[in-house]
Length: 503
Image (cartoon, rainbow, N blue to C red; front, side):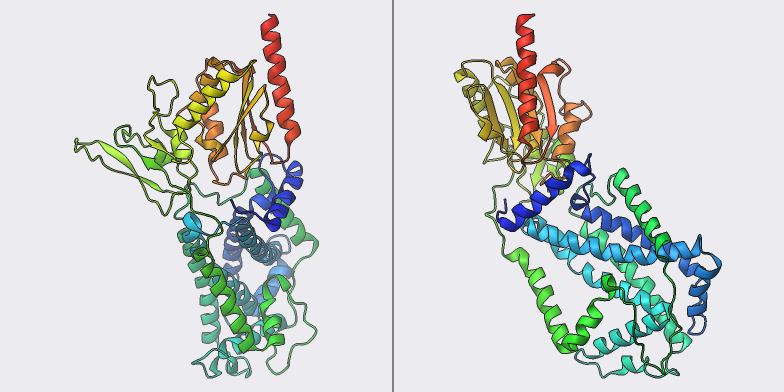
């Protein structure tokens, strides 16, 4: 796990504002989904705007302006929401990139997702800046002229593009229609790129939780109503625009390029993209052993395939050659080494009467057998009935709570825990069991908390048996520093155990 003060500071900020956004609605934990939400808002509002848009140099400005003047509660509102959605789309995307970098989510099994995400930044800016061209007001004129001059500074170009915006006779309806086509085509390329970006992610979260989604849309509408977007004066290629109200969220590359000069800007941009694309070649942590399949204990049930967060497991014909029999196969470059597959395997039950518990699929660094052995030894040495706490090493460190009456186990991920271990611990003499996952929406491997909850509720296999007394089990998803909640759960289980003994 990546360490460092920057990472620790970021995680602490997220955990600090978690109480303000219960149920996994913390915006900082949903930046990618929020960006997708704003992209969807752009596509939907842009469709309506295009229906009313006149794709000609003389008709572009009046058609857009009429939306604000004649349809303030529909066209004008959608136009304003379109602009502010673009601002938020850029903001959320850049914050999402920053968060993934700070948390080290760019190497090993995440490398392909990172590499397919970085080029989307270019599509985002091309589409966003190009949208200002189409307004064809003074701000659109500035955006078109500045970006054309910037493009002309590239090698192999001779300044022909910028000349289209220096002479009023050069901007024809045909050329303007080409700009419209670019503004429509690039978002479609961005949409395809986003689909490709998420190919190795199982069940990607492309929309935030409902409360956050509706709240964000309401905020977007409120901003659009409070500060409606209006057009500037019509573009006039005979004059140089001055005193412009720039949209710094989307157009910031243009004044930056002007202040640095185009060659310097392109050089810095090339370096930036080069560094971003090279990051996966410099992993920030030692690669952990990946999941291992045991052919004698794998029956091809498909549970590990369905539960893998990164589509790292497939089914192939079993090596024993029996017709129709299959076996799980792990793609090492995609494996997150989380152990969620081991927790899903039906053979991962500690009640099996074997000396060595060999799982159908398991983690070499923390096997189900080693967990059973440690649990059995610890319960045997305990002087009184202890509370057993299963935690995640990426969340709260539950092993620091180890003492005579509390046994803590940090797992690779809380999703590694087979539900049968809860019943096994209770039968072995535990006073109660606590399953302590990471805070909502903060699972390092995305699906560990979700699958654990569903297994505990009996909605996913392998599920917790109903014979487990509910008063002796606590399932909690908390931040790394919420020790008070864990202590309260331990005290509650002790109290229940004491009342049970008295009864």
